Length: 493
Ligand SMILES: *[C@@H]1O[C@H](CO)[C@@H](O)[C@H](O)[C@H]1NC(C)=O
Ligand SMILES: *[C@@H]1O[C@H](CO)[C@@H](O)[C@H](O)[C@H]1NC(C)=O
Image 1 (cartoon, rainbow, N blue to C red):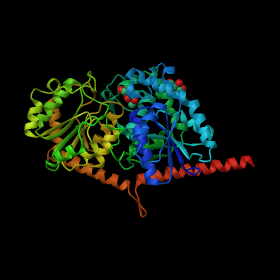
Image 2 (image 1 turned 60 degrees about the vertical axis):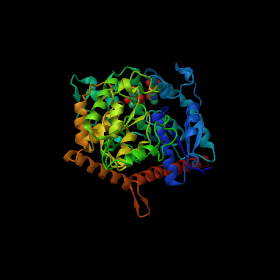
Image 3 (image 1 turned 120 degrees about the horizontal axis):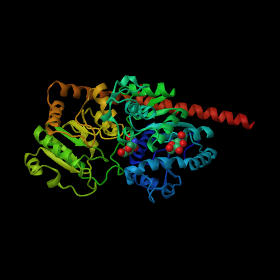
Image 4 (image 1 turned 180 degrees about the vertical axis):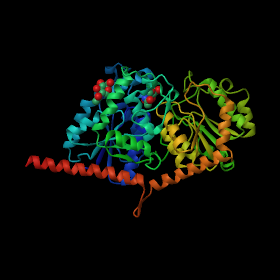
């Protein structure tokens, strides 16, 4: 059991895309500091799921906070966005604010415990927890699994709704002029439909603004390549902002695989037969798929390009994502036979060991939805990206990668846009050929890989920026802890 001031409470929003980065953060703090005990707080069904994904050697504690979904107009036993249709996601967000009294009670008990916690680190959607922590004299941080630039665009869009104030397709962000302009096609559905009075707007505008009460913000990113995003939040909130990334799950834990479609060994053996820098990896994350017509065009593009590829496929939009993949129906006629014969492609169903694949020297580029975890995994291995953003802040991640970092070409935007196989094939060729653009992208991606290695250096003589940021936020929390205790002792005397 941890001593006083050595326990850290983590409180992620109830969605896999949020819980997994928090689990990664928990393991990273545990492993790099070897000092703190982590307690993850969540609703009962999420705790149950988490219990199964915590590695045996970890001493992470889990604490349940009561929640009854049916009290909030949600189906019974639905505590995670993964099991909810899109129109109910916002209801789970609203319902999460009802956890306030229970969280307060739980924290108050912990504060009276001899193992009194050092700080609480809460989700970007849990701005309301800042005032609870303040009432109790507990140091409070927000952790974003997403990067600074992407989240800055997202945050600014919600608090300003600039697209509502113009008829033009392009507009700028009033408090983030550094990014120049955004286009309407780069808005995720819930922002593009927002008018300030709908449920999403009401939730986001109030709860994101609550960050101002937090003691600091942690980002899963690097100061070196995400300085614009860090600048935005420092200026906007006048709080410390710490770039502590990349925070990644070091092994493909059970929580990620939705039933793996292929073993790491098969991928490795296949990749071993391919020349260095010759394979395109195509994967849109564990939550996404594309439309049937997009899938057909992508398949034709992969054939046109004559490059090697590994493609993680899922049934297209409109079909049950867990149903069998009907290659005869969804891919061009004879496609599977042709790629099998030419040995140019490996088709994987549902899920692939992404980190193992990206780390292989045969990989040349990654066609990705630009989810932040995928971006960090690719950059950590110096792999340039062909961006096909689909939702949330992915559009802005893609913009950062292409316009600021020069490691990406955007090939398409969204799950419903029309794509032409000639255009996709042309971008694949640009990125993978030995001509200038492709070479330049690979060179820049390798620079970023080295930046990441340096930021993670943890030696006595040399502490990387991310390791130092982790150290700094823990020191700030410790200073606040001592101050709080001194005040209390004085008050008691
Ligand atoms: C967060 O959003 C909910 C739902 O819109 C709202 O009821 C609540 O007041 C907001 N929280 C804060 C702290 O403003
Ligand atoms: C908007 O909706 C998506 C689902 O399409 C949801 O996952 C997301 O949390 C919402 N907010 C964002 C991140 O855009």
